[in-house]
Amino acid sequence: MTQRSPFRYFKTSPEIIRLAVMLYVRFPLSLRNVEDLLHERGIDVSHETVRFWWNRFGPLFAAEIRRQRASRLRTGRQWRWHLDEVFVKINGRTHYLWRAVDHEGEVLESVVTKTRDRRAAMRFLRKLMRRYGSPETIVTDRLRTYGAALREMRVEDKQECGRHANNRAENSHLPFRRRERAMLRFRRMRSLQKFVAVHSSVSNHFNQDRSLSKRAHFKASRTAALAEWRKLGTA
Image (tube, rainbow, N blue to C red; front, top):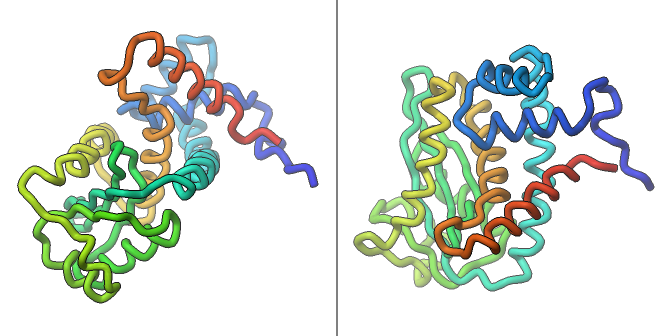
């Protein structure tokens, strides 16, 4: 059965919609910044149109990227995960953003909760293991919530704690923090959860470890990532 195109009710070309969504999610730009950048390229759209495109197609593109990458990750060896959580303010109230990163720095999962207790940690871990399987080592900080959740799941022997051992997970929060400042923070927990899910998938897709590869290899990888992005949503 042929899959129906998600662009079938839109007069704007899919290439312009993909470009607008990529600019807004990948870079720390506001909706009006994206509107101005598109105007310089001869594309006249409103910032509200960009908002509608991002809300409509952002989760769709992210789900397609996540589905492709998750299938590849499940077939490989999951030998080390890094888990961490940060505080996020929503309308003056503190929420918690849990994030899991693999040994190569790729964001596996991001979950927003109102609490930081054992139940929230177990919900995060179960969702993570259901999608990617079980790793050999789980690196965390010294938050007791992780130990309690891992004991209840009977995988406490996989936990590893140490000074500077979890820097990979802590550094993974930096792109989100830059994006959060550009968006002037979030107003709803639901919108935060949707954005971090899309942002992590898009960041994984375009992250080429520029400083760890030769220029020719980086250019080839960047071109391949952009070519894959231009095929998202095709029937």
